[in-house]
Image (cartoon, rainbow, N blue to C red):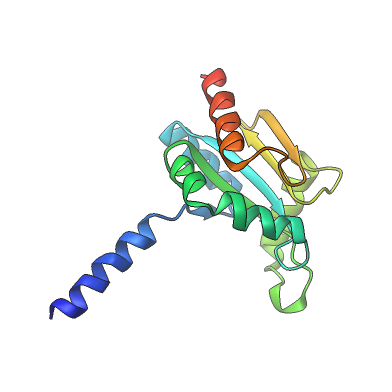
Length: 148
């Protein structure tokens, strides 16, 4: 029985260590207010945008960033896939389009925005961040600290 129990426990631990990405901005805002966190909104083209894929893989899904995000951020992804097999439901596409109209009117990809709980823009990153991973995390931390 132990050989089944240990992998189950480890699997649960691994699942709990990953940052949750939201796609409902309104729910994310409510959660951010409740948990006193800021919102990181990322616009991506998950199946066509090389820098978007790289940003998620090398920065946003890194252990260091996820550890920080779990305690400080509510993460929202507004995805704009192009392949037919990856198309979003019409309602989700409408929500993402509305977010883009408000926060990414130029249609840049990747485009990342740090927001306070009221939706005020604190910082925008157009493209892949020029900073190292640690510098990016430190910059986000300092922006959050300055907003308190």
